[in-house]
Length: 60
Image 1 (tube, rainbow, N blue to C red):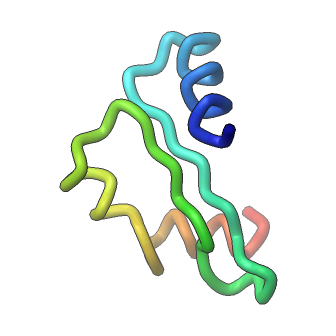
Image 2 (cartoon, rainbow, N blue to C red):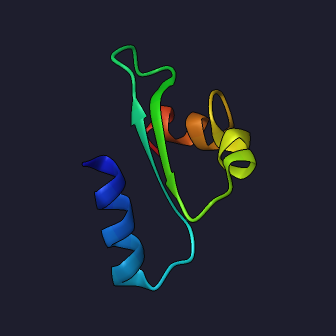
């Protein structure tokens, strides 16, 4: 379901790539990171504690 949300958002914005991060209960880490349009290697770069995770967890 979340992957579908990412692909719909990509279609609406004519984006080549899309991602959606789901923050865990503690608010400190990403629990899930759903991507579309990225290679497997490309999506692995963004998983875990990254600047994107930091921004999502800090409420930016």
